[in-house]
Image 1 (spheres, rainbow, N blue to C red):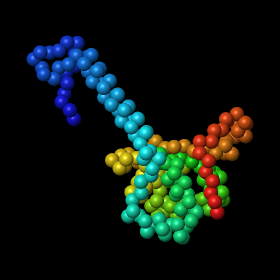
Image 2 (cartoon, rainbow, N blue to C red):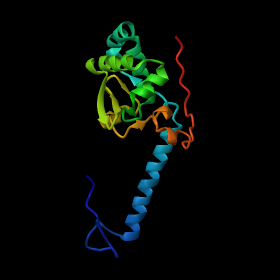
Image 3 (cartoon, one colour):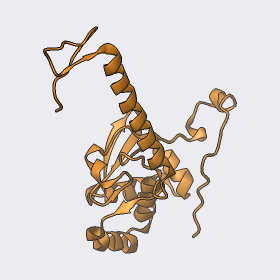
Image 4 (cartoon, rainbow, N blue to C red):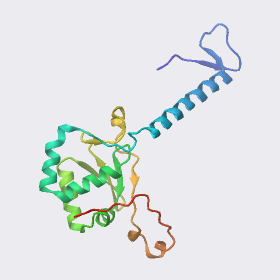
Length: 181
């Protein structure tokens, strides 16, 4: 913590930590501007779409790729969609449609990922919030790993919405995902 500051309408000549309201507002404005500049630098960074990976988990991921290729594909989908807090929220329907798999395959594959510690599955209504193990993958800078999990990117499928809403919802594709067999 920094030094305690006494803010008032005038400077107290007997208190070296005394500043005026205007001086304190200028400090706050400067701090906000510095935060905005840092955020802009991070957005322009060539590493903004990178996902970091811990090589200590290579053997587990090779096992997953060989023994459970659909689970491996789901893990890569979740990692690609996760936000900088290592989470993404979507339903089984989204996973099924994107990867072209059935509900049972999606369910069994997610169970493999969960049982082997690649993801944690949290409930939000009928959708799941998938929190990717941040000792395996993470998207934020390494010093922000302690903030993994929330808020989450939310992925919706048009086919899951009520029929009367499907015609009213204007869909915009942000990212086309296709899988080759």
